[in-house]
Length: 411
Ligand SMILES: [Zn+2]
Image (cartoon, rainbow, N blue to C red; front, side):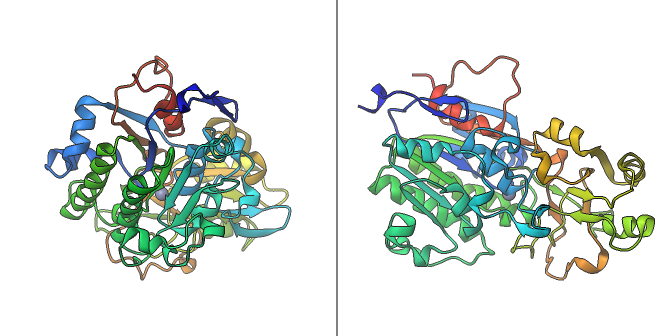
């Protein structure tokens, strides 16, 4: 009987076994207002019930408020200073290359998912984009696949042979709301068939990048999600939902992207190409945000004074805060060896770029919405059960979601 098993220890935290299946959902880009507006608009009856009768919290995501650092924090239960994934993209100082941080070799911590699988639990992970799959599934025995590549699953690599057949839906486009719907549909089908002990579902923020809370398109997305979550609830699962980051409009009064181009500024001040600006939002799917987010890290040339350059950057209109490496890593719990000399965060409605010439904004077919900064740190944490023993006065994080779902659900 599962409930009799010893707690599973991961990264200094202990997680109990649950009697019912536990589904943790990371809704990409879920600014809290998406949920409240969908509920108010009558589009999300199940979520409305959860807010009224279950557990409804607002918690802090990890800064930088990007997808990979937060998904990995959620599945490890610890911040990037421990697990190492501090962006989608970074400058590998040792190798002197700028690379994607998708490879599990960059992951420095065990995941709750892998640890439960080793302890004998059945696990299922479904992500929208394939970029997250290998990180989330690292070391984990069980089912793990992405919507994006659901047409090529094999038992050896993904824990099941025919994901498309299981879900019974066509392969969705990587730029579509259907990519996330496929994740939820797969979750329901897996719960009906395999009934895993623990399931992790992670969507994509395609809709949130384009549509503000309360718009018909946003409400339609939350209505879709609400229907699947209600099915997981009806199947007896504990469903805990949180987000990797919020989302804000990043435009000026005329609706054009509000961008501070850091590389252009630094080239003027220090000489062309002497400083290196890294935008950790960068990934292979930049069409909907043009690689523009509200967080950047800057590597300065030898001899440049970080304090002086930092003060000049902080004085630029639209820049919210500039910190030197040690202070930034202490405040945001980041790995110092993977951050530059300075961390720059822009204001709520402003993004940071490198050079004008390096951003292709031609794919933006809607006013820019993005994330990455302090202004996207507040996210919902909802559970379809009442909870007890939440630490009073403690700052709750999105990466407490497994602790809350496994350890703090009231019986
Ligand atoms: Zn995201």
